[in-house]
Length: 57
Image (cartoon, rainbow, N blue to C red):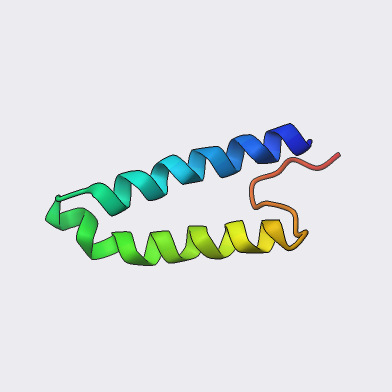
C-alpha cells in the first residue's frame, strides 16, 4: 500500500503545481483553500498518518 500512497501524494503534488501556477481567476477563488488542505494532508502523511484515499483491507 505504500506505493499507492506515494501515487496519491504525487497526484496531489501535480494539483498543487497546477493551482499555484494558474493565472485563471476562477482557480484563484478556490485554489488557496485547496492547496492548504493538500499541504496539511501531505504533512500529516509525513508524520505517519494514512494518506486520505488510501484503500485499506
